[in-house]
Image (cartoon, rainbow, N blue to C red; front, side, top):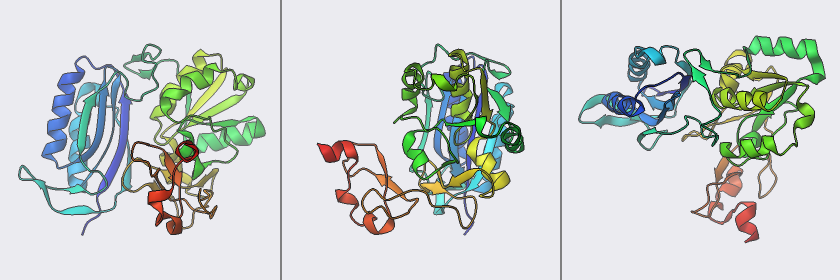
Length: 309
């Protein structure tokens, strides 16, 4: 059976009527049997979808036909499996099993930093963001500036437990909304004169994070264009990246080579692993690094906050 394709994509561009775009995007994705999540705001679109190759290609083509979304940045990867029958009676396409449903929503932000008033977007994208670096340009920067270069992780802290750039600063944030307070705390002020490279999964979080850092006096801010995904496509595990990449779908994580470094440690037995699962408390959304063996005890493994309680 064919393997589904999964896309991770975004574009920052002014959108005059987000609700109308939401209805169009919902109908388009449903007609193609696609599942995943799409967020739309007055500043653009952000999504991840999975389905049959032809359906996903049609979605990308149709979305790029809408003027503001012509510059849609799309990263492709392989999913797990397709359902055996069409997603619905209205489409001939089968859905990806990596997503439980299709969700299309309008939000104040297409990536939730909790600071919509700070973000400025024009037809060229985010205003005041960091200098974009392609993967090879990142290596050039490190070669010329050496240990002065600071890698700054723009993801939730738990994501970095199984993969990160070597020597990266990993802020203590549980959600993206924690970044503003983290930056305003002053704990990174000593980096304001250093070359700082922000990075995240596909690049979108760093579009906003780099602009927030620049506005707070960080003098030399860069962002890894296309994020970890594009870097991994270029250098695999032969460059500066170590470990596995956490993804927010049924796959859990992806690797860039058959033999990636394993840097995560099981919270229960400390064995090396890149496997992650939810805290056993149904009301908790924390993700924990748990090995296959201890995974059999998943109903009893709690995050530190709930274990202490």
